[in-house]
Length: 445
Ligand code: S3P
Image 1: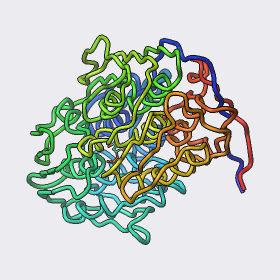
Image 2: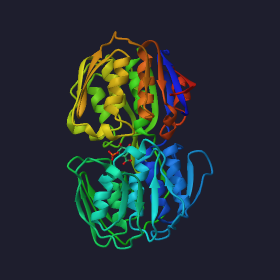
Image 3: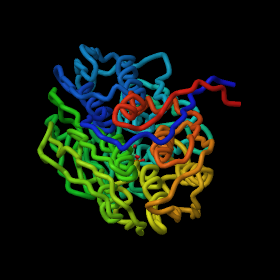
Image 4: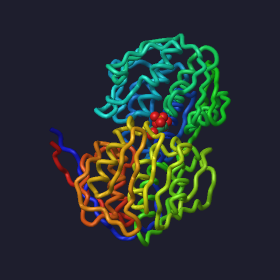
């Protein structure tokens, strides 16, 4: 039995404020990894001080990379070059981070030392066969527990070869693992995606000076080049902003500005979905920051209506479904989600977790194998007081806290500690702009 953090969330005031969210998780992981194997010293600004990205930094330190943290959100990484990592006798603990484990698996598949990657309870349940399979084809030797789950034992291997790989699931993590291994492989590594996914690995490799050819749905590179140190500025994480965006959409009287959010179009499917539902969201001052598109997002309350989420945008909003389910729960009429079976293998089964929690809060949700139909309560609808379980999933915890802003009474949300993996300071920020979320230490049985 372990002491876990529970939250009490309830209706606050109209949401108002001028805010920033923490740095992008995907970009922070990649920036650390590429800076670690680059030549020279890289500086990362806007780095996400989350448990996931700190776990990656700790692993790179274990592998001999000097990483300084001169200030909050800043890292100075003294790159050791492509072949400069050193083995560690200790296991490499990725914590809760699927991105950390899958990307590191690619990076470590072609090293001259063996290593073992482990994760927490949630990560230990997640499928790793999807990275083991292509890396094995490249010549890597990776042993997993039953069902291709962590821990992963990666053997020393200096003889990877490039492959031509068609991704069977839309996954930027798998694509990135193959490309990272490709840096160490003989010949050309090509990846093809039928559904383009986030392209940070490709654009960051190019920025670090590695010759890479890529366009949506395709990337290819040759092994044996070098990475040159780079200064990187990480934009605000759209996936964190998503909770504040939905909160402002559903709480009457809200008007919020969220500054400097990354709006890479492979991440912002939620904006398209919410706009189709009638949301009032304006991208102000669009600009580039560290090579990425960013904007300040102005969100005002609007009455929403249900939609059929186009399957074509599912990959572009894969992390935003918990937030979308909440918007749908308070929209007029049903919202239909399909083609999103990947949600079942995230930090938790997000379809089941959201359906169960929203049901407790008084919303009918029909689960399907690859999605759900959420029967929204409409503009005047109120959720009821309930106890819900975030299942240790950071995004479920934040989604339920947002939902509670339209509840009569309180939502008690169990198992919220993992919010610190992606959105440290969520509670303080949420309260500062009008939400009501309090922490209550509780012991789950
Ligand atoms: C990520 C890719 C996505 C996403 C995850 C971060 C990345 O996972 O859900 O939060 O940084 O590449 P998949 O590649 O498994 O879809």
